[in-house]
Amino acid sequence: MKQSIDITTIGFESAAARKTAQLAALAFLAVLGFIPGWQRLFGFSGFSGFFGVACIIEMVHRLKNRNA
Image (cartoon, rainbow, N blue to C red; front, side, top):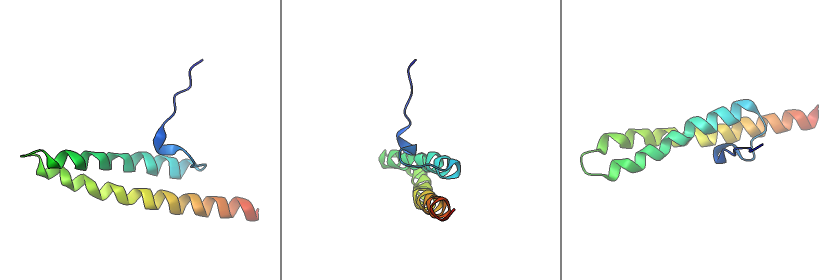
């Protein structure tokens, strides 16, 4: 049985952090904004902030589990 690995979720234990990191993966679309005429795709760069949100969610999750 093959197991697929999603690189956006490596290291995240909580489900909320994994989903947030997967949402943040949309930030790669901002790179396409460098193609002439596709400048509107720079708006996707805002999704990169979700990586920080995922890290904060994961930190709170690990602290809660450590103290429990």
